[in-house]
Amino acid sequence: MVTRLCALALTCLAGAASLPSATAFAQSCTPTHKIDKLVSPGKLTAAIFEYPPYSVATGGEIGGVDGDILKSIAKSACLTFVPVVVDPAATIQYVISGKADIAAGDWYRTGERAKVLGLSYPTYLDQMGLYSKDGVSTVQATVGKQVGTVSGFLWVTDLQKLLGSNLHLYPNPVALAQDLEAGRIQIGVDSYGTGVYAQKKGGYPGITIKVAQPDPRVRASAEAAQANLLYTKGNTSLGSAIDTDIQEMHKDGSIAKYLSSFGLDPSAADVGAPRLAQ
Image 1 (cartoon, rainbow, N blue to C red):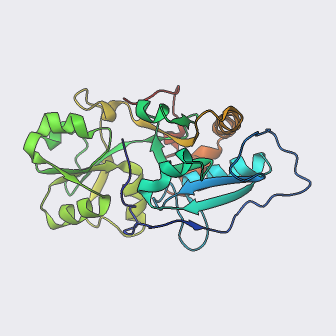
Image 2: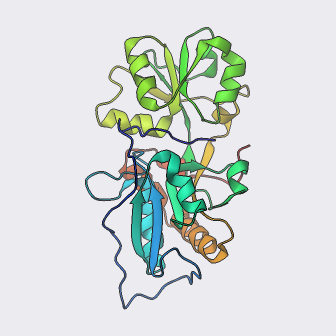
């Protein structure tokens, strides 16, 4: 299970902090959905962490692809959007313990999470990326090389079987990037979207990032993980509202637009039918 122990922005956020809402409740608003249970009446409380471009919590304003989706959902239901910024490892627990209604930050739809959380309709695909100075794009190119990846991703187990001791696991993308730049590893495997965004901000100098071509030996290369929003299990009215809004955002092109606005390929919005990664 992907826990995202550190954000790509080079710092982890410890503790919880509420930030100003970008979506204020309007007395004249007519909600498109009726939500029966919320942590705080009239408010959509969301646990997020710093993981650009999917969740951005710097500068006193919530942004990122997930941030824009959340604000749209809150607006549709005439709710005040209340983001609570927490450490990545605490995000899911905030929902399970009843401190937040929803969690965001590129969380995958997995069978394990479905046991304890409500999983929304898929929001976008998180594609497997290959990072190298040579611009490799195939899984075969990693064979015989020193390769690094971040613990917890769906491709880790398959890569361990394929590469054995040549695969090095890192606790976060920062440590991976440092060894890749220093030449201690030749190829990095990480989220394509976060790498592309980081490059636009000056990260990964001299590194080419490619979407991994499908290879049956690494299932995640052929079937990209579906991201989603996590909500309180059993809260059917909240889940229904979230799913309806996300599907509408797919239909009107909003999610593709959000992806494009952060420099990501809008084709990642072509999620296909909902499925669970095991």
